[in-house]
Length: 276
Ligand SMILES: NC(=O)c1ccc[n+]([C@@H]2O[C@H](COP(=O)([O-])OP(=O)(O)OC[C@H]3O[C@@H](n4cnc5c(N)ncnc54)[C@H](OP(=O)(O)O)[C@@H]3O)[C@@H](O)[C@H]2O)c1
Image (cartoon, rainbow, N blue to C red):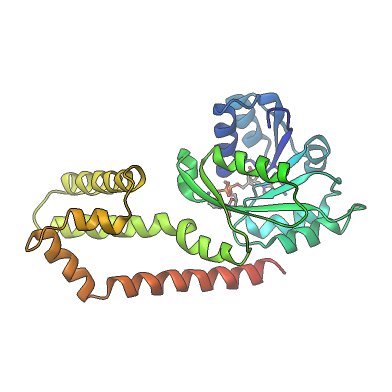
């Protein structure tokens, strides 16, 4: 991993987080490069991380073993179609929604190579604070070493795990991709309910956020499933039991299933639209 040359096409929020994470995990800065159209954005990245930058995507591709595609979904097709890919490189896309088959098809239009190794990762927003959750899918042309490199890159911004079937990326999008927003929504609702119960805004906000953080930390660090952790703090006849009963009578679990299914269906629709 420490000898790999990693090039980022796209120098925005996600590229910056991944570059910061990789350097913090010990990758030498001179193994990392980035390309984007805006020279000022590139200069800021070069100043912060001492990496090499260019406005020429092809020049970056020619110098790197792993090309991280970190641009918005709407511009990926045009960027891939303009590139002349080299055999043996790995293309790691963090672009939401676009299937590996589309990326391969676009890249191979100018390629005089065999099938290209494409790995797709779906990170989420907490990756910006190195606490992300990413799932990865590799097409059959990626080698074991390339899979290890992709996993190490995504681990620089948090948890990284694999799915075997690419269609599961739509479920991942619905779960961890969109998931931070569900937790924010729950926090908003708790803050607003606490205000109605008479707490001031600052206290309602801090108690809500710290409670969410503490619950997530317990779920991560105590070797019990969330159902057991919940039962452990729900005394018969107590306050928590009364609240949980109210959630369940309101159809909480069904609503969560319906919300995730709706997100999964929208991810499928977007993949079809953007992957054309
Ligand atoms: N942010 C998240 O939390 C998150 C979560 C999951 C997945 N993702 C995915 O990650 C990808 C990047 O997201 P982001 O938040 O980092 O976006 P972003 O901040 O908008 O960055 C996009 C970058 O792409 C560059 N770019 C545009 N056209 C280009 C071209 N022709 N050649 C090279 N670079 C070009 C932009 O260049 P300039 O700097 O010159 O404008 C910018 O640096 C997206 O596809 C998104 O779906 C993001």
